[in-house]
Image (cartoon, rainbow, N blue to C red; front, side, top):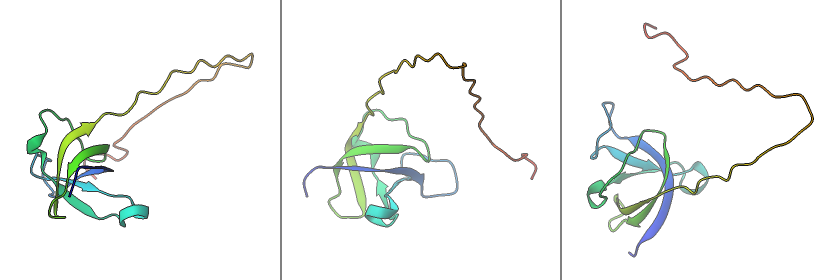
Length: 104
């Protein structure tokens, strides 16, 4: 099988901390029914991945059981848009979790 590009969500195959041998790529429900494939990162020089991250990888999957990426493709940065309006200014608040106490 030749090189191909795949897109998916980074997941961990164990309940502990994610490391280079526990990375799996989960496909979308529409395209691959949410199936997962192990990822062998030995051919990639530098990488920084976290669970839940959406990534595009370029590489091979010779056996169908383990994807071997040669490159992690970087997203294209979005262009900044300047919005001008005579309307009232908008205030935006952002927040992030955890949304429950640690002791629950």
